[in-house]
Amino acid sequence: MSNTTQQITLHVNGESHTCSSQTYLPQLLEQLGLNPRLVAVEYNSEILHRQFWSETQIKQGDKLEIVTIVGGGSLQGKG
Image 1 (cartoon, rainbow, N blue to C red):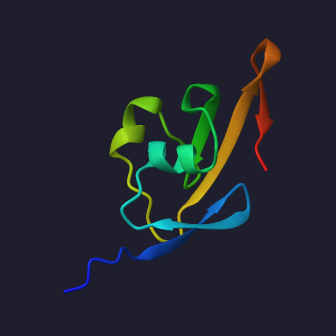
Image 2 (image 1 turned 90 degrees about the vertical axis):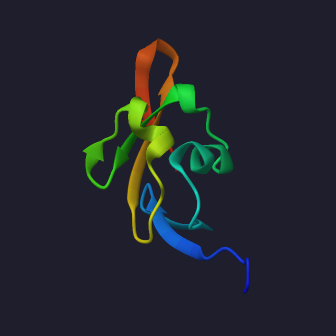
């Protein structure tokens, strides 16, 4: 039995990315070099409240829009 982890493809701010099929949202943000405290996430066209991030497992074909908070509380698209 193989213990290799399947890679999946998702879209982040319109760009294709790959990650492990075992990846949860906080891990993905870390892999992208983002500080989770300074971003907002739209997950498959819906704003995903922070309380659900740790239980959100990334799936094949997911679409995420991630915006970062910049000085003054403004939002700026990442990517």
